[in-house]
Image (cartoon, rainbow, N blue to C red):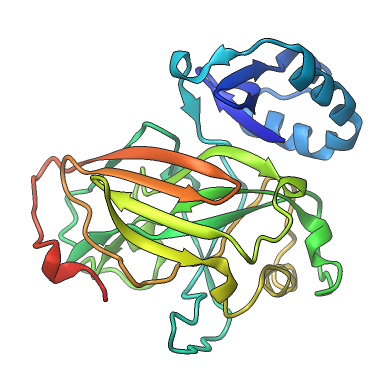
Length: 287
């Protein structure tokens, strides 16, 4: 099942090229905000599932081109981003490590990455698999960790490199608009093996990143086990699995960035730089 928010964060399900309205099915979830509605959807999913399946089968939807899709995780309590994460053809075995990214960075399909005035060395895209937690998780074993996964989405961990007078990952990756995600939250039953997914990213139609999740250093159960030993994970929390750095390149004013993950979907965002800075693309793409 593919859960979406659309227009003014109305809940829906994707059915091919249509969006099915499901707000009537969620009327018993007391939720003053979209994030709390999502968390209610997640925690009550087993109870809601029969009605959702009937809606997908029986209801007519609205064409996708007539709605505005929004980010499927509007305000995650925790937005945890993996550092490194892939062997990258060199059998790199970096230890598990994560940083917190500001939830205010999150934007959705069709939105715009706005490069800040901070004088970074360069601004990069990072295409990543996103994991959404489905239940309260603390000190979980590796064997039980996947039971905590509710679903997946795409994520672009936009990064400013070598921002002056900053230390660590958080200030270089948490600028507003630096966390595009979407187009949908895909339940885990739709993704039989999250460790065998093609991830691709294009800038202006030219492919930059193209890798498979089978190259992860530590798999998703190991990541969840590690994180749950540090802090309690809750429904709606978000884990980004890190990126393969081959193909990373600059983001510049006027760029259009597309990201696609097999079985999950594809989304596009724009890039705006009020300062109109430029970088030589050929010289700044990582081999």
